[in-house]
Image (cartoon, rainbow, N blue to C red):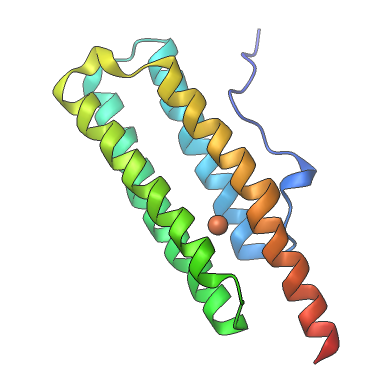
Length: 139
Ligand SMILES: [Fe+2]
């Protein structure tokens, strides 16, 4: 039996901006890896590697997204960037807890990350892509 993915890609996540969509898919994959590691108890070494990967990729992706927003002169850039900053800090904090005491990777942590990603992509990133589209039409 193929296990159901923890978080799977849905068309409502599509921003239509290829780079952002590709990176979102990768982010979801990393979170799925972390979840699989947690569920299958693959051990702390694996968990730490995936966690580090998640942090690095999150930072890289946010940087790219912010760059696209800056170039487009997005009026909600600061607000959006702030959300990225808060989430990045949260993931780093989770990692700190996990690194100290491995059995503290909890389902709650994973659920939080999943909820946050779903909300942020569905609401905030889509909001940007809609704005970008309209703005390009006006230009
Ligand atoms: Fe974003």
